[in-house]
Length: 410
Image (cartoon, rainbow, N blue to C red):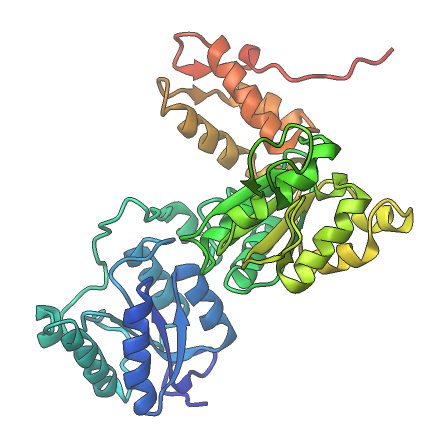
C-alpha cells in the first residue's frame, strides 16, 4: 500500500482499473500495463468499476468515453469526490485538472498511446495528454442520465432503476452492484408488487451478459402440464399438440440471463430437473434423449418463504440452497414511505410520455402517505394512473382524484 497525500484509505500502488465496454480495448491496455508491472482490474461499466474501487482503492482509473450504464461525466465526478487521491484518466489520454497525479502517470500514458496506435494512430487528445475535462459527451441513447439531486445527497450506489434514497434501498443497490458482475444465482425475495423483476433487470444490465438475452418465465402463469416444455423445450410429437419442435426459455437465454418469477409455484417434479440443470448446465428437451449444454445465469424471485415451504416438503431444500447463493430482499413500500414523493414524481414523469404532464397537490400526496400499500409500488403506479384520468384536463391531481381501497370495518 502507498499513501501519497490526502485523507482516507491509502491507495494501492501500481493498481489500475480499466473501465470500458470495449473488451478488445481493455485487453490491449491490460497487456501493455501488465508488462509494466501494473495490477490491472477490468470493468465493463460504471457500476462494476464502483464495486472494484470499493474493494481496493487503485492508484489510477482509466475510463472510456462512453459507459453502458452511467453517464461518463457524472461517474467521473463521483469518483473525484469519493477517491480524491486516485489518478483519473480517460482513454484518449485526457485528465481532470486538479485531480491526483500518479507517480507513474507517464507509464499509463505510454500504454494508452500504444493501445490507440494499435487502432491506426493516436487520437489528438493523446498528444495533448494534459488537456482539461473528463466530461465526455454521451453519444449513445443507451447511456443513462445521472440525477444530480441524488448525487448531491451522497448516494454512492445510485442505479437508475432503483427509485429511493432510504437505507433499505441504498443497501439493495449496493448488493445489486456487488453481485451483478459475478455468475452467482440470485434469489430476489419480496412482497407482490415491490419490483422484483426491476431488480433482476438491473442485475442483468450491470453484468457482462448485458448484450445477451434477458428471458422471463412466470412459473405461476403457465399450466403445470406445459411448464416443463416451456422451460426446457420439446421435440415434435413429444406430447399431444406438439406439431413442431421448439426451444425452451432456458435455451433461448443462452449466453444471457433467465429470470424465473414466482419460483415457489414450480411443481416438485420439475424442481428436480431444474436442480440438475443448475448443477451441470445441461438441459434435455421433452421427448429428446440427448442433452444440450447452455450458458445461462439464473435469477429467481418469490413472494413466498421458500425455506418454510421446504420444511413443509412443498419445495426442495436443495433447490432452495442452490437458488439462494446470493439472496436479496426488496423492501415493501410501507417500510420506506420516505421514498413516496420520489416514486410519485417518477411515475408522473413516466405517464407524461403519453399524456400531458400532471403535478400532484400536497393534499393528494398526504392521502397517499396515509395508505399502507398492500400492493406496494405496483399499486401506487395504478392509483396514480387512475388519479390522472380522474383529474381530466386539470394540470394538478387533487385529493379527490386519489382513490385507494380502504378496508371497511363491519
